[in-house]
Length: 210
Image (tube, rainbow, N blue to C red):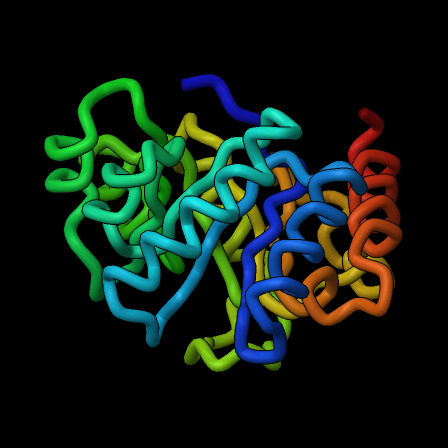
């Protein structure tokens, strides 16, 4: 499946109701998000699927691919574009086998070795970070931009930078060969998610002469 990783918005429902989460996703898509990931670390399968179906109705309206964090079963059940898995989730090779060749499989890779392994196992893109400490409830370890750049050069698939990024601090990535940026709080916590998405995307494209 073809996809554009330029602005990858990851949801965080810890400070949203279902209604405001869906509104934030709609605003993010309207503001230029090119991928949306639904991340629900503490939600059971039934509720996760129900929310995924609602979010997909929004992303479909904008033709933005929906990625499901961790849960291949939920991704299959709602016919999402794909999944994203971390080091403690299902292996990339298993996700690829379950989803088939036409779905997107993304993986977190904090080292060159992990990046090469994920690519060999069938990953379509990698998320590398955290570039800055984050305010999300997901445990993070800061990754130097030099390591991010090494990961980009080590694999032929797109690499997106993640971790505490926003329109004001993205300058550290100006010379990095990344394919895009992934953001959570910068959009999901913003007073105006649409404007936040627009500013981040505009800044990224300007930095990378696109």
